[in-house]
Image (cartoon, rainbow over all chains, first blue to last red; front, side):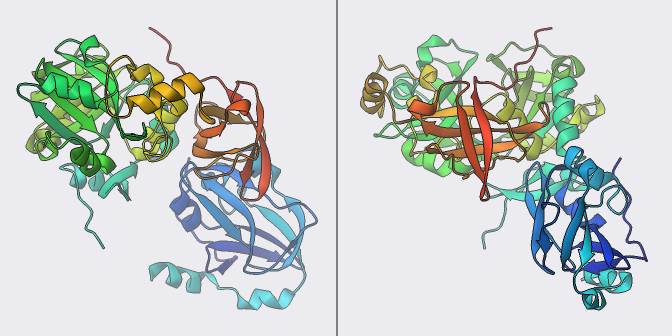
Length: 130
Length: 343
């Protein structure tokens, strides 16, 4: 079942419709409800390699629907410590639960100060309204 | 910017929450509930597509039969009145200007149903025809239960006019673009809303262009503008069966020569053996190009059509698709990917 529209309070957001859940020097990354809704049913996730480096504001992977391909932009810089194998196997998990089981990667942050540049939920909602 | 045209069903699509996109100059529904769900509805039960954007050219009067024979590739004398035929319009080089369905109403009266994007090119190549697209709206009702749900019968590639379907006067044709049983219903534009509502009331799922594309690709029906074009011939595209090379028509010499000498490339079907979804325009590293690709809802893997060098065109040949810089393994397979089961 497709998820209801939501934007959790405890996440930080990137204007390209990506989210980060920061816990110490680790962060979990994914795409927002808005992003998965715009794409439609996700049928393929092209993940980065574990151990590879992500740069803030740059693409680290792709999600694809039947009709379209979308780059996934990293909200933060870091090193990939885990790829969500469940989403590789069952990409529709992103549609079902974009902030829970549908996370895409976990990273070890290389510049924790970047977190302050991200949007909070109020700012992200404002961006969506525009 | 050109204004997009809308079919008589536009408000209904919007009210159903369809995602509307530009297609061939029209604002058309690409999906309602979701491409996968709509695809499965057509494979297992029934779906309805608004195909009112397609064009209709009429050719009637003395000499119409000879004209059709001289301009279109298939032998129209293989069908009687009340039958329809898949045929091609080719240029002097044998390139495919369009693929279409010719409805033989009488020996000297034909209705040609053509691709929306090619109406102008077709009309230019067939100036003796009359563009009657404005007079028609069309719905395609497709799926194993389609005819039963509508309470009608129609044999494949036959049609009848002035039939009553759910209280609307229709042309009923046993044609479609999904590989399933079903029909296409032509009616006056002012009746299209009533027909659409009546079809939905029978439990038929509204389906958009997204599912239309995945359905046609699984059965390897070519899409003009992708898999076939004025730069490709029916011989390269595997459509020689729709060309009568014994008769004379525009481009026949080129096609006879190609049939004799063979072609450099051929249109083949392939499945991905590695992760990734093939897309139009991707390079096939052994020599060739992807012309259509998607994730098959049925096979749950990437499938595609593309031109490859004839030396690499046999089924089971491994090929490599360049998926945005990543080489990914694929394998050529016999067409089609899917064939419906007889009931």
